[in-house]
Length: 156
Image (cartoon, rainbow, N blue to C red):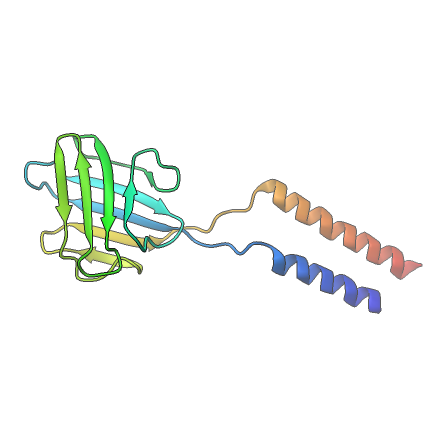
């Protein structure tokens, strides 16, 4: 009986010590045509909420620009003061910049945000990261090994 509780304790420790899965935040931005710049939509996938000023460049693996749809190349995106209602989103295009401010709420929460000019930012929780198959195989073989040890001790 002691061995059985030891095995259950070991299994529980393995499960609880596994890294906790955390969801990503998906930022979807829509801007109408503004000051001669084309309408734009892009999506950023971020490991968590953006809480301080961020400069985002195309190709950045941590903050990947998935879908710029403007007629111009996006050179940089800046999210400034995301924790305040004076937050700004600056999009630097190949032929100019668009600065959007006057958001009613801060960007440190999920939701749909629209400023006075009709620019929209949608922040939604994305999927949790999926464990690698090799991690699952390693975990499974560890459980099988513990079960085998328990069976051998129990039958002896």
